Each structure stands twice: as structure tokens, then as C-alpha cells.
Length: 151
Image (cartoon, rainbow, N blue to C red; front, side, top):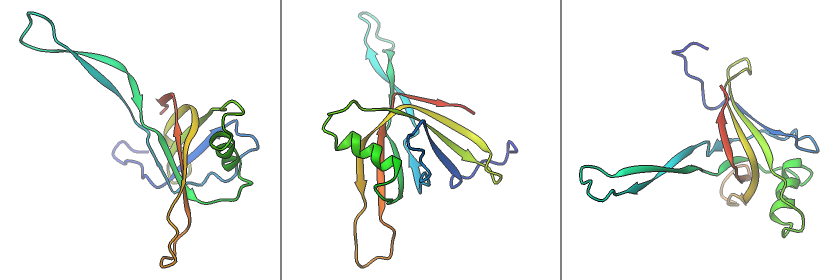
């Protein structure tokens, strides 16, 4: 990849590390939420009127959202979401690590993010509308603890 040739946003892959059974149905229409930031807490120092100190708080992260066409209940991802969201905490939540990569035309990663300790917090299905000819889309929202840009 040339420095002046930015990658395209439509060619990407999502890989769940250690998903059992292996998940062959990882084609997603959209990935969003790869963001983190640091909130600040203002601190006014007595007698100092020229400025306000800005103290950093721990990093905050958005939830990762994955959109795709609906799949069957046999999907490993669907099974993981069902056991987490419909299990009433009868079993411990099993977090997964996820790798999201932007790919070039030869399917080689040109940018990659490692999402650590992710688990589903929301699972929704798009609207059903008899007047439209569209795929049924499901959205899986995942909370996570770490986000690292790998390349």
C-alpha cells in the first residue's frame, strides 16, 4: 500500500479468536464502534485564576456494533449471543477477543484492531416491512475492555 493510497472501508474482516465451534459465518455488512477516548476532569486550583487543570480519567470505549444478514440458530455467534443474553446469568459470561482488519485488494491486512474481552450486550433485528425487498439484518452490540491498533 502506498502512503498516498488510503484503504477502502468496504473490504474488511472480523475474526473471533477461540470461538467454539469455529464460526464460518463472519461476513458482516458493517462494523462500527472502534473508538476510545479519555474524558477529562477539571480541577480549579485555589488562588490560580489563569487556567483550570485538566486531569485525565480512565479511557472510555464505545460499544462495538456488528451488522449482518440474519443467520440460523446453528451459528456459533448466535449461540454465544443467546447463551449470554438469554441465559439469565445461569452461566458465567464468556468474553471473546476479536480482530478487525481492513484489507487490500489481495486480502492482506493494511490496518488491524484487537478488541479484548468482548461480550454481547444487545442483539436486535431490523424492521420487517412487506413493502421493501431487503435482507433481514441483525445487529450485535458488544462491550469490550481493550482496543489496540495493531498496524
